[in-house]
Length: 495
Image (cartoon, rainbow, N blue to C red; front, side, top):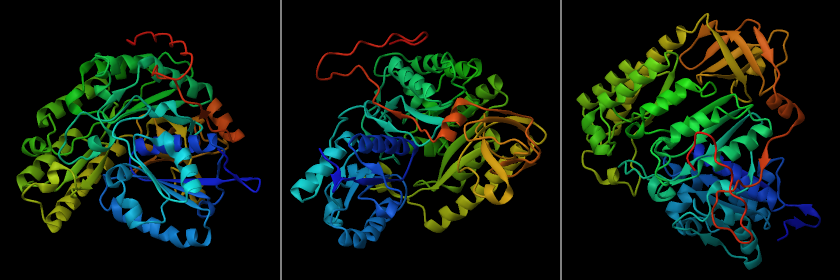
């Protein structure tokens, strides 16, 4: 396959919408493109290939995609050699409809066949017609594909893909398929490879991370994996997202509390505080179980910051149901929450439920929820004024940093901290310790000089302009040729 025209390599740009899984998939797409000889376009609008990695969960996802495709049409008419590809969840859902609505699209690929993209682009160019390929099951686990990471200091590591739950508001299982788990040794091999490149923080990623192990029959596999990450030399921070309350077990709480590099931050989706609504959502836990988990987490880790997801206006939600959500919010004392107004997603059971809530009512409840959350998150943040925090310096977290002279990063509990640098010159990836001087609902300020600044290998990598680019990590799946030797079992993890 050649990706050069008149001696110049073809360029690409990947545009990502949606969840962390999509962000990680886009790193795989970039790795594939560069392995095939493409180079990232210095200017997005001038790319030879534009790839949209789409989401089907958010409201108006369809309109956003087709609006962006329409915006690119004049550019493509001026540049006939330009190609446009659409992948991700919306591509999996809409399939051939995309090229019917936007016939200037060259390639449509699904969530199960990301690895086919370079070949499909070449085929579309050779055949001079659109290529649509949507598989119904996973072709290869995404982590077997090469990756171009976006960060020098933090990396996503998939431990599973797909989901076995049947939440009535969610279309993800039909687009991502049933849960497939990686073996612990394969996960740890990728973690170690990232750390060897200078990465100091990893986030273990899955649609439902704490059901990890279902494929190989170990219900305690996720807690064991967290503990095994604690043995990776040079790995300073471990996070994970997202767990499901129904699968959250005491051994995971113990692993979080007892493994020094596992951060005391927990994202635990609530969705609703009403038992009646939770039942209609097919969320197999109830208010008291949820609050019981929060209580156990805080007993083991008093400093834990807990975040959540909440949906307002699910079909049939009454004022009493909504008040139950507010009650859980008050009792749980979240450090932040991702809040959504329910919107109909075609293909989900909830889309055809009776008693859809009028938009005006949903909006009013949403505003009340936001006001309650902001009051609580502000109060919780104020408790940290005067406290010392460790901050991993980041890129792009503080939109006003250039104007204020501050830098920004995340504390170990996940809170956003804008800090003064004093005489120090920290780099993204470095670690500073500083004291909180001001609290707002969504961030903290530390305006004095840092107490300490530790230069790191991640900071070295950022300064040198290196981002990790990894080849695919073996999964022990069948391949063509001589089988590779199996990875050694990680201590504390069943393989």
